[in-house]
Length: 276
Image (cartoon, rainbow, N blue to C red; front, side, top):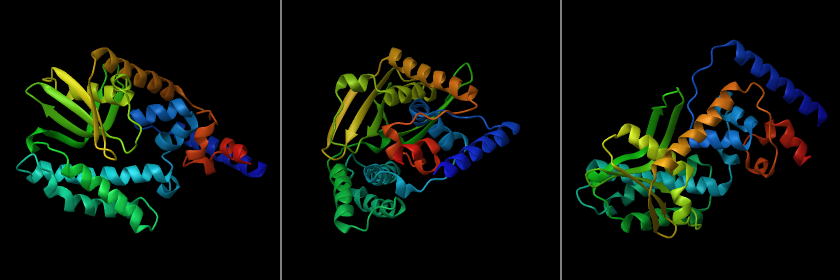
């Protein structure tokens, strides 16, 4: 085991040395990359600097189930935006279920028809109980990109972006969990506030930004208005991490319980030493 750890450390050092001699591409920072660096700089290095390929099947099954549901809802909302002619989303169910089946395979989910059927039912039930005007959809899996005055590049993908009235925008995030956040938690949510700021950069006509967590498992929708102070705080958090990450040449790992769900744990000497 010691020999393996030594070999991995040598590979990490030599890889970092080769990268430092080339001109690195400008990095974009997101909610995910910010959290990854805060959790473990080495994990951030694997994902966003070295871009080490991963086996999706190593991710926790619950995460992959959530991705399957997201894919079904995404396909449905895109279909509704393109051809919908009323607030009723029932017409999108066949497209959504096909997307669920495709995602089930691509996410390497178990060969379990009953489990896949539960995912299909979650998506179907969500769609038939939702009313939404097609014209109100501003974006589905919408890719935000903006740059701060000091040059920090920030990006993110919002599950759903909706127009609310003449001057309002709602950022909606699907959460495939039975744990519901409180209004206070939503008001301070890092992701929702960052996406609210990004929305203002893209649609400066908006006078009001709100955010929602949509829970397909139970059909709940939690909604709050976002505050400019909290949105600016989310941007500051990204800028702070970006500054640290750009100056980091070692990406020292921070082992912990998160190593158990890390898809790169088999490559990390510190994670291997924990499991040994």
